[in-house]
Length: 350
Image (tube, rainbow, N blue to C red; front, side, top):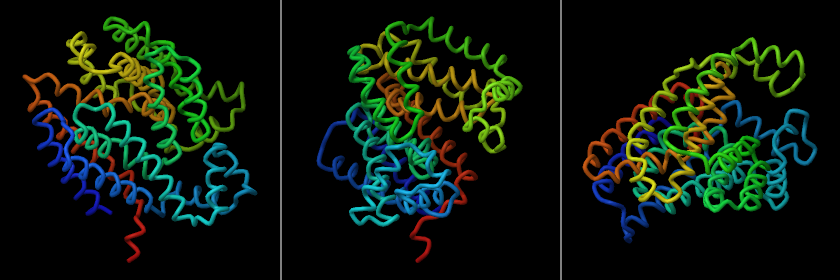
């Protein structure tokens, strides 16, 4: 898997470098390249096997419809999609491929529709979330991707459609429920309130320490909270000013400095900004409980695939920004290697 993923990263970096020198324009080559990248990524994601979550997903598929207590905790939509596909003759491998087709396809559609530099966005997506989310946390991958389709309705202030989309997302993973926060906060966003929100998150981060969550557990026996606290791989301190939060703040600096420019040039900019600021808030406010901070922040920071390439619209700094994005993607890609080294591809068997 190391060789195939590394090759894809190098290829994506090269395509992003070439295509990023001018604003994306649709042509036959870019359409074919985009399609090939999509097929490659969804096939690789659907071919993973051998990690802890993989066997949980396999068990849930095999047990359907008589799920065990462990499998029943998985969301309704995920379980019954597996049951439906099982009854029409899908194998476990077919199911994984179909699921990755949906999750990767939705992200490619989101990027194609809204990014000013689609291949740069794909590079960020691949290096930052694809490996950890679309290959491992597949329920969250589909749910978060679907949640992005609520963005136009958030801007239009259409609560019914926003709520309906997020409700559907929750059939696959509960984390998307938090995206409703963006709907309520979006009308009030401005550069000053961005700063205040991040500072408020830091204040909460100092108050919501490990003792607080353990005390909550003594008051309310919340099963999921108890399972997370008992698992050291989930329950640890990120640090109030953790590297991911610092990276988010660095990205926000040029965005806020050129607030009016991006508001004019980037469609749904203020919705993206609201979402990204909420990622900063949760990363700081829940920094002492890694799994909560990371799971919720990854939902809100999904707009980074559009926001970060949008910095390249500042023509004066386009090449410099592109080089920095590729460098950031390189760091993000290799920083996750230790977390995914247990994951294998079905191709490894041959």
